[in-house]
Image (spheres, rainbow, N blue to C red):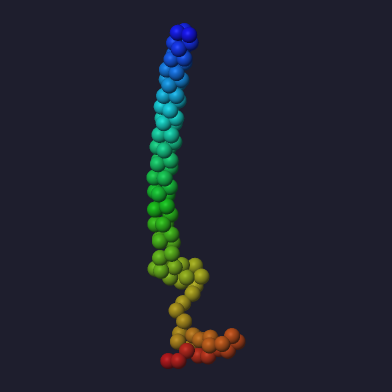
Length: 96
């Protein structure tokens, strides 16, 4: 009977130690995962900022105006060339 209690106590302490080690191991794994995710988020934020800057550069009106003139040979229309569409199929000259 005494050996059963001792065995039960030793088993109880052993289980507590195993659970403690398991929880510590899991905590370190989660911490590593969290740190990895934070680094990934920081990299993605940096990429997003770079892409936003590139989008702003590519869609700048001065750049688009230059491209329209140089690449596509477009010019500013004369007032007489501007038509206002009031209804489908109906063109009118822009009032001056």
